[in-house]
Image (cartoon, rainbow, N blue to C red; front, side, top):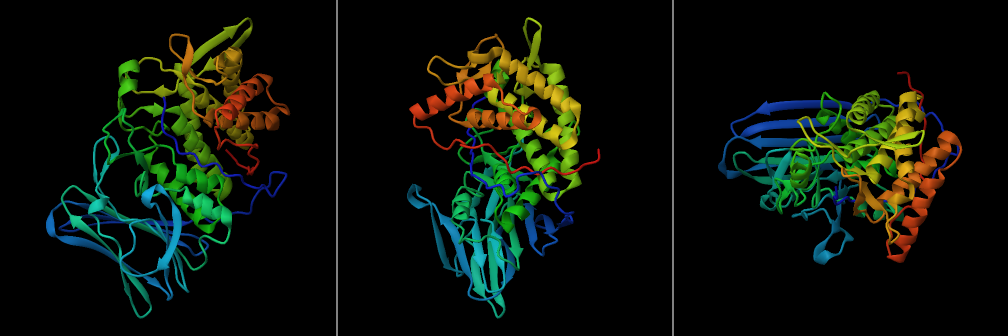
Length: 478
C-alpha cells in the first residue's frame, strides 16, 4: 500500500565499537487524574523524570457549549524569556527567536528563561470522529497570551467552549537545557519534527493527515497511526535531553493502544483494501506495527523499561500468528521460503499483497529481537521470510532498474516502490546478517545495487549511506 511516510534520516556517530550494558536507569513516575465539571471532563497527565524534568498534558472534552472561552493558565519561572519556533511562512522554514511576549505565534515553541527550559505545544483544538480520527479546529483557538509576573511569565491558552470538542496543551520543562541549539545538527533534526501541522502529538498518541483513500478523510482530518515518526527520531537519533524525555513519553503512551491480541489497529477504512481484499476498518498493517515494535525494543535497550520489552514481545507473538495464518509459501526444488501479506483483519478477508519493504522490516525486527533475547523462533521466522525474498531473486528488479513494490495475490510482482525506503531496509538487513552470520547476502546485494543505480540516475537523495551501528545490547531475563 502506498502511503506518504515522513522519514527523517540522520547519521549518528557510534562512540562504542562493542555492545555495552548501560547502568540501571530509574523509571519516570507517571500520575494521571480525571475530574468533571459543568463544562466537561478534564484529564491530566504528569511525568516526573529522575533527572528532574517534568512533562505534563491537560485535555478537556467539552460536554456543554458556552459563549465564554475556556482558559488554561500556567506559570514559567525566570526572567529574560525568549520563544524559539520554526516559522513556516511562504513555504519556507526558518528558525526565529523572539522575546517571550504577548501574543505568541501558533507553533510548537522552545522557551528559555534564566531559570528554566521549556517545550510548549501549539494550541490543539479538535472534534473526535469515528475510527480513531479527529477533525482539526485549531484555527479557532487563540494564540497563547503572555503576562509577565513578579517571578516569571503567565501563559494562557484560550479555546471556544463547544460541546463534543476537545482542547489540549502539553509541555516539557527542565531546570537544565533541553536542547543545545549551538549544535548545528540539532537545528536540522528539530526542523524536521512537525508536531502541530501535518502531524500532531496529542494525549492519545501520534496523528497524521488522513490519506485520500482512507475513510474518514478530508483537509482537516487526522488519524492515529500505529507508527510514530517523532519517537523514531527521538529514540534512534536522540542528541538532546528533550529527545530522551519525549521518546520515553511517546512509547509509554503507545502502550495503551496495543490490543489484547498484541497489535495496534489502523482505525480508518482504506477504500482499496476494502474493495480488493475485503479488509475493513481497524485493520493490521505490518509495516506500521513492526516499526513501532522495533522502537519499543530500542526503547527498552535505551531506558531499560520492562513494559517496553513486554509490549514488543507480545507483538512478536501476534506477528508469528499472522505469518502462520497468512503466509505465502514459495518453493524451488528443496528450498522453501515465506512471503508475508502486508495486512490482517479480524473479519473474513482475502489474502493481500506482500510488499518487499514490509517483509524486510519484519526480518530486521526479528533479527534484532533474536539478538536481544536469543529466542530461536525469531531467527527461524526471519530466515524463512528472507528465503522467500531470495527465491524470487532478481524478479524484484524492474526493466528500468527500479524495484517492484510487492508480490501480488495473482502471483505477479508489481506496483511502484518508494524512492529510497526499501534501499534503507536492505542496507539494514545486510548489517544485521553480518552481525548474526558474519556475512552479507549476495541476492540482497544485487537488489541494492540495482536500486542504488536507479536512485542515482533519477536524482533521488536522502537515502542512507552507511549501516546503522548505534545499537546497544542489554541483558534480559525472559
